[in-house]
Amino acid sequence: MNKTVFFDRFSSRHIGIGAEELQEMLTLIGVSSIDQLIYETVPDAIRLQGDLNIPDAVSEFQYLQELKQTAAKNRVFKSYIGMGYHGTITPSVILRNIFQNPGWYTQYTPYQAEIAQGRLEALLNFQTMVSDLTGLPIANASLLDEGTAAAEAMHMFYALKNKKAKGDTANEFLVSDKTLPQTIEILQTRAEPLAIKIIVGDWRAFEFTEKTFGILLQYPDREGAVEDYRALVEKAAAQEIYVTVAADLLSLALLTPPGEWGADAVVGNTQRFGVPMGFGGPHAAFFATKDDFKRQIPGRIIGVSVDAHGKPALRMALQTREQHIRREKATSNICTAQALLAIMAGMYAAWHGPEGIRAIATRVHTLAQVLDANLKKLGYTQRNQYFFDTLSVEADAALRGKLQQLAKAAEMNFYYGAEGVQISLHEATTLADVEKIAHLARLELTQAQKEKYLRQLSAVLDAAATLNELDLTHVEPTTHAVPQHNILRPDVVAPGLPLEDALFNAAQKAQNQFLIQSVLDE
Image (cartoon, rainbow, N blue to C red; front, side):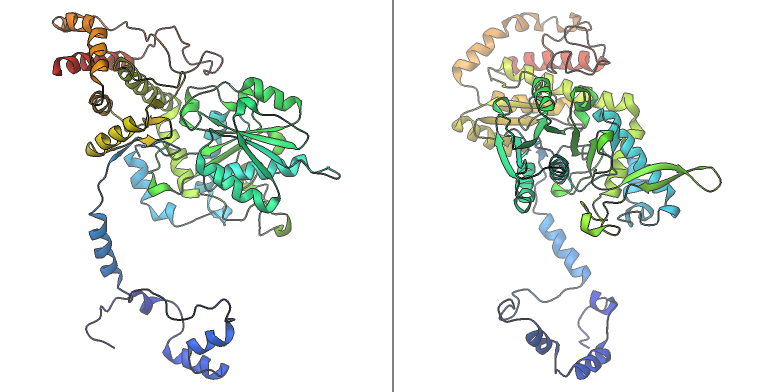
């Protein structure tokens, strides 16, 4: 053994054959080396000719040192990209006691349900949370990600629609072009072997045919707009076409849940419920549907039963889909879950409670309103009449480029589309962040826009000297960015009524102070 090599190497701890056992095996087989065994076993057509172009093996310590050096080159920007991924705050109690606790994170799935009642209770809590927010009676114990959940819904409804079909099958699945792009790509990949035809287009122009079995809508959509899909959903139901809605779970604390306006399934992810973004994933997806489809729902369901002593007991229910029971009819395998992240999301909801979740959603939306008001004062056009947390600002290529340069210098990431810039706020956003974004936007105003801006704020300038005397405690928003009352949850205040929320009053004051200071800075 080379005395200069690090002693603690993974290969020496790996549970496998040693040098003597290896030689005994090769002798018994009749070959001189592992390379010869591979050469004689793997066909030439698929075997790599030559050595792998990889560096020599290193120890764990060496690898971590190299990784730290590489990571140190990163610049950590504040992200307002959205597109299904949002900043969130993980409560310390969940971070310490679940995320960093091997009692929770070492098991990928609760195979031994009889000795995992705590885990099953946590997953039941997750299901209950999803059911409450989506407005549907049944939810599973998580899936891999939002795109996978949408694909599972497509598969489920395709099978249901064609279960008794004779002859040509209904194989067209209509997908709104405002669906998240990663979801569309997963749908297209999953549809190909099933001979399902994915049709991506404007949901307002959907044309149903006898071949249509389902549709997918995004709520709010990829650009942040909140649309009223009721008429389309009613039309689909009349023609026995299944409706799947990919929803932002936090927004459903304020918006009317899809289950209440006719959706057959609601899917999405729970990342913004206290789960760090994790470099893009994975994040626990949710899948909620009507009770009619409980025997077709993918994944697993945690159910409540009683034990031999008549006491409440939890168990994994309705597993006939699972790979280990009926493999030939499985719609998912035993590992189709994100148990740890689902538990974190469920505990996040339990920690904050219904009022806390609504307060977080209200705060995010209020900050978006404040930013929207600032951008409009600056002369920008914001395309989303109704929104939850995402603004879509019109900008030509030149303006997008300038804003991107400024954002990079300010260490902020926005989403730059073909027609403008999208800014998505989130739980970790502060009023100072909003002010910084608005200040960045102000730097790119043309001289004409600046003059218009000054004229619009002349009244505010006149009042600047007496700012401390202004009574803003009863200011009502001139517009409410969440849609009209038929979209709002019935227990959320409707537009035109005072927002009895101290946060809004504080935000309104901060907004006026910022606008005044912006003009004074000119």
